[in-house]
Image 1 (cartoon, helix red, strand yellow):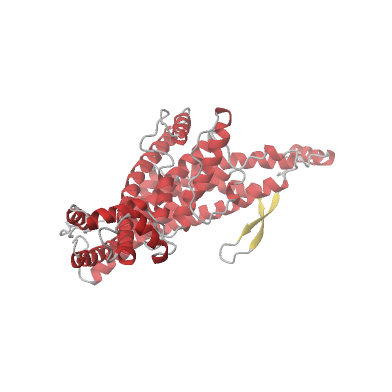
Image 2 (image 1 turned 90 degrees about the horizontal axis):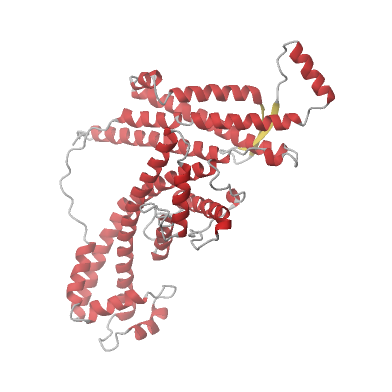
Length: 464
């Protein structure tokens, strides 16, 4: 190919890549993060069901894991005798990696290079949710398919619905994320090849254009850049073979963004439906609070039994005979103040807290169906969002206190009794996911309302 033709192609490719980068940054990476958030939330729901059904064990080191870069957990085989142990470790690590990806990873074109794309793809394909089957050749997919089937045994309709919905969301999110990663890979590949053309092969004759010669010059011209032989071979074919012009034309066509078609009128946004979905999500924590309550009662009994000396028994007997109120049980809890970043100590009356939690759980349960839902639906949006925000705050307070209470039981139980203490980390994680989702819906409502108000101020009809 003539030198001028190559220069013209490079200029056109550069402009096409700049436009595509802008589109990826403003549209596709935003969408990918949303899809990954859905993916992570759906997996977390399944993960906590697996823990609750004791199909896997809780990893005691899970909360201590520090992650600085994405790593795909182990995918190799494991012996049947260590199946539960290995799967427990792998899924705990996987849950941590997804949390890091969604909450701490950068989603920018300049950050997500080909190596990082490979890592994200490895995480999304770690379990083949699209073809989840006990007959899978993938050890992880096979094992997860088996425990997913087991998790459906003996559960109520609500749990079955959660499992089914989670699997559907994982399948859809997997498909969406892989498609976006494919677009990203195409951008990076052509951007890489353009850099090589400008820094290494510019002015190189057809006789000299071979992999060995290019590799010799590569390290000095592009220090720190990986040498991808497959891409180098593509450059040679595109720039020096008779099929090159057609190949280049196909590349530009594949990268070019489609002209935006006139947008059809948007259907009116049902703002109230977004708020009511948030109400349903936060109301759904009631079952988890009930499960936690039973564990707290058992843990409190274990601690109180340590105080059953002779005079303790006499006092309890006298109170029973005189129908007196039982002694208050006061615990001093410690939690981290999220605004100041310092530990805070707080005393709670356990019996009073349990009573308040049961009342709140009952209120939350009424939000998922029945007269309370009908009454809320009839309210103005301002009233509903105020009610949603108040319940989110209440659930956040309970979550914080319960987390501190969980730590208290584990630290105060005598060593001989510590194994009897029932942890509530899986339940707390379930509640946290509900808080996150309810807050997302609240923010989504606010963003939609703000967009509508801006359009009105500009004199644009929201349905246009």
